[in-house]
Amino acid sequence: MDLEAFIFCLLFLLLLFSRAKKQWGIWPIFLALVGFVGYRDVSIGSDTANYSLYFQILKNGGAITSEYLFGVLNKVVLYFQGEVYIVQILASILTILPVFYVVGKKSPLPYLAVFLYLTLYLYFYSFNIVRQCIAISICFMAVSVFLKNKIWFFSLIVIAINFHASAIIMLPLYYIERLKIGRATISIGLILTFCIGIFLPSYLLNIAGLFGYSNYLTGAFGLGSLVGNMFYLLIVNAFFFAVSKFEREKSAVLFKLFFLFVIVTNILIRFPFGNRVILYFSIFQILYLPDLLSRLSGKEKSIVFLMILGYAIFTFYMFYGNGEIFPYKSILDGR
Image 1 (cartoon, rainbow, N blue to C red):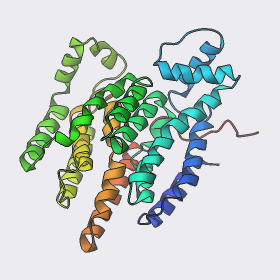
Image 2: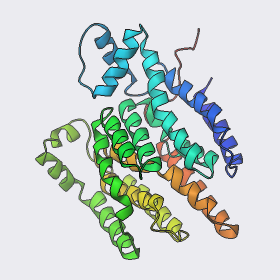
Image 3: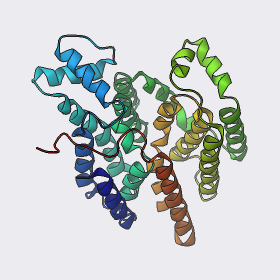
């Protein structure tokens, strides 16, 4: 099946049922999304060939430099004489299942949440940065469901770290309820970080150099473009300001996470590989925006819905085609 045609048909249906509250219908979608990621050809996704190479190295008795649990996943498949596509399927389940579990458990508008999971391009990263997407999904579940359970929260974050070390940045979120944000904090924070991210990213690289990462970050990629990223940030920040006008519970955890997403995006938008950190915070939008919409009524609800729709379409348009996913090809093609 053609992935592009499926996605556009699915987006239309999700939009059609975006205000429905029963969550059982998201699970057939879950299976379809897992299938597309799991059965992708090695040529689909800019990193898929590398993961296939890792598997072959282990199969031939070699060793790979990777986080512990991802190595375990490959070795378990090898133990049962499986092939690399089994690793892809299991990895896609580990990525998408936590997201759908959280959406089904926590979102008042699950179809809109899935719509945002697709249009904010979060799903499509799972075709590429596999280990990190697993870590992001586990962290998403830890913060969204188990924030008040210290043992479960830290256990899940440790598991995520063992899939990708970058997940360590999520540990401080255990204390997010203590974060106090008011109008001044929001205004100063957004303006300051916007200026830092757009005009001073080279200073961030110098700081990274103190920890030995400067050569790694600039070896193959330079700073992101000034004009294009400034335009993107203007849209993101304008959307945040517009949405926050309708938010009456600015002390809520989901609003704080949305605020942190914009702050982190502002700072790292031009930074090489900055999007890989941004993703940890971006995913909370799929919970926050439907939650906000469900608390509004009448004209306010219609206005915010149109704002969310416009923002989602803009984001999808901005990122569509990234990651060497299209045209899609499956290992099942021709069988």
